[in-house]
Figure 1 (cartoon, one colour):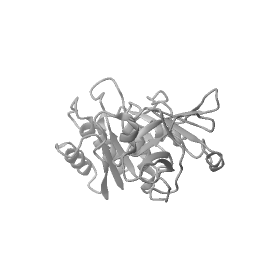
Figure 2 (cartoon, rainbow, N blue to C red):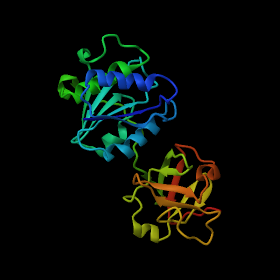
Figure 3 (cartoon, rainbow, N blue to C red):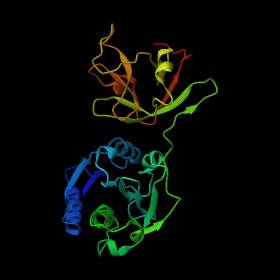
Figure 4 (tube, helix red, strand yellow):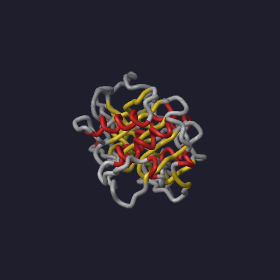
Length: 270
């Protein structure tokens, strides 16, 4: 059984090691504990939700994903288990699993209430170690979701990923993630921007800047490569805005949550 970890804990403190220790204590037979990342920006639930969405289905069916970006730890927010056809997700009820639940429409969501599967003493500041890790260990050892808690439907949700269509027939999306290279990942997918629409002359507007070049890959030749901002389809299936060996986010003055407008009739000064 594979268990993955995604957190905002960083690598400096004992937190990640403690979570792994509890996992392996509960279920020594876990075949692998894989770190997706521990560098989610502190308390950034949406960044965690996007990163989990981008990575989860790279793993074999049966994988248990433990995700802990939890600014509400110790409060009334609930601990959750999400069960899809192929995967399990364990973590806080704060919207962290919103994008998984958008994609996995048949998922079942459980409020973790059976304290028999928690550590005997639960810290109000470290549910990753004391609730989520032991529950993941129990799952890895074959405990059924129904034995861990009760089904719920009223779980927390982030703003939906899908862009909205505006009155002037443009699409309003947003920047959902800025990666290590400064590429701006938008919420636009091929569903909203099919190839024929792009071929018809779609332009993007971000923070007053126009992007009207689309590439198939980062190093594609262009007459203005050195200074050009361009869009391309990223590996997670979303349209990204990039610059040639530079940070598009810096050039755009962009930040996560910022609007991205897409349309064929935009009039933006380049």
